[in-house]
Length: 277
Ligand SMILES: [Zn+2]
Image (cartoon, rainbow, N blue to C red; front, side):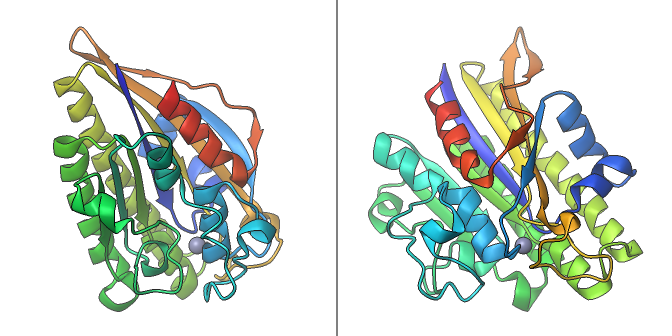
C-alpha cells in the first residue's frame, strides 16, 4: 500500500454556514463520512498568515507572515508540507495548484509552497499557478480543478495542495451573507466534488493506494465582507478529513483520528503523519 495525502484549501469559507445550510452538500457528506476538527485561526485572520500557518505548521510569530505583503517572512526556515514530505523521502512526488499567486508564484514575495526547481526538473514536483485576481477566480478555480483532476488521476502524486479562491472573492465583493457568497459556495462545493471524484477514480484504478483527503479554510468573512480581525466568524475554521481506499472494487471511506479541536499549526504534522502511515 502506498499512502497519498491531499489538502484542499477553500479560502474565506464561513464553515458554520456551509454546514448549516444547503449550499455545500458535498462538503457535508464528506464530513459525515470522515472526521472533523474545529480550528481557531490566529489573528490577523488574513490569507497570507493563515495559509502560511496551515501549510508550514509554524505560528505567525515563527514564520513571520502577518499580511499579504509577506514582508519580513521567514519561510526559508519553515518549508511547506509538500517540501517537508520530499525532504523526508526524496521519492515523494508532489502537486500544488492555486488561483492565488502568493502561495506558489516564484516571482512573488513568498511563495509559501517552495518552487524546488530541481525536483520539478526531475518530475517529482509540479506547480500550477493561476492569477485569480486578474483573470477571475471562477475561471481560474475552474482551471485549477481541471488540471488537478488530471494530475491526481494520472500522476497520482503522494502529496498535494489544491487551493480555490472564489468564495473569498465573493465575500469581499458582496459580503458573507449575500446570495452571491452562497452561489460561490455552491460552485466551489461542486468543484470539491469533482476533486473527490478524481480521487475515487484513482483509487479504483489503483487499489494498492490509500488516500487521505483533508479540507480546510483560512478564515471566515464578516456579514458585510472582509476579514483580518478576531471576530469568531473570522477565526472559525476547521479540518475535515477522510481516508479513501478501494476494496473489492468498492470505494471505502473511513475517518482518521482527529481531536475535537486542532490548531492551524497541527495540520502539517497531521498530513505528514498520514503520509507515513
Ligand atoms: Zn483568505
